[in-house]
Image (cartoon, rainbow, N blue to C red; front, side):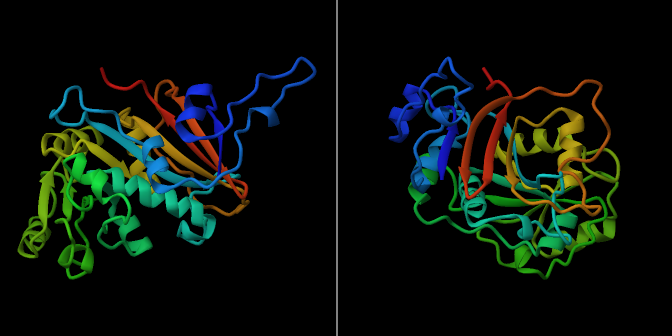
Length: 284
């Protein structure tokens, strides 16, 4: 895996790679801006993808909602209903690091069903980092659902290392709310209607002390976060594949009045896969 951007002298020194050279007068110099090929350890990836720091020692981490998604070159967010077919070992390595940095993983109910979600587990090699950050051994999984039509006998709900959360609206079916609570699942109300509201999801989780948020979709949930203007960061893997078909894009949903403009923070590459990271300005 190699770092493509930024490869300034400061980042090169931090990560032990050669600094990028300036473009020559004879051309665009794209290849000269690539850092050297090297293997990235878990600690280095964790440094690169670190959440914004607390404003003061001992203070809570600021609320920060990050998304991690994969897309084909022609915009498909999955193949045959699952993301595995367009992913790679490096993509899964970064997937694991992003989970290991988060307080909570927010995911839509349909993605739980399609991807066969289980509870998050500790990430070997990053346990001390979580302890130093005041985090538990693994992030909680927070499932967003309006209908609560979920099987509460699944290991995600019965065998989590950290209790799974269920996020819904105030008008969710009472029978399903009682079924969830009977199964020991904590239900979080984050909306006045049947379903949860994107801004309220972020607000309620932050109020509960889990400010480092990671959403892994699916696309419909991410589209809701984007439409509401509450997404702070997008970690997008660009898969060197073409899928065609009718697969959803990574964030379908109502259009914003004006597109949000994010800043490119970093790009890594391995075997043709690009691992990009775009961010808003960090909170003051």
